[in-house]
Amino acid sequence: MRSAAAMHDLGKLAIPEEILRKPAGLTGAERLVVERHPQIGSSMLQSLGARPLADWVLHHHEWWDGSGYPSGLVGEEIPLGSRIIHVVDAYDAMTAERPFRSPMGHETALLELERAAGTQFDPDVVEAFVAAVGAGLAAAV
View (cartoon, rainbow, N blue to C red):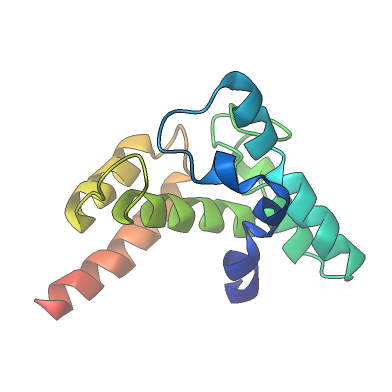
């Protein structure tokens, strides 16, 4: 799981830097290029014989309600590893500095994960993540 999470965006190595670092919104064509990174990363991992990591990377942008990509998988059709990576990646994206926006605070990001549980994210994974991270934040205070 740790290795898959660390390599989930491996396919972005094939995405032009000017798209990845663009400070404004992406065009439709640019978004399609970025949305290919799960397939690219999965292919790289498959060529190394790294299953199930390749499957988890392939499906880490699937949404619980089926509106994600690349396959439009729904609910438990999405591999559990992919569902976990999706939540962790979203939390990281929300709390990290980005060229186009400032980071959210930890509590705001956790609330956003909870808001999207059942649509974008597996509700059970969100619940476990919030419990683990929330407990870690409480201990740090």
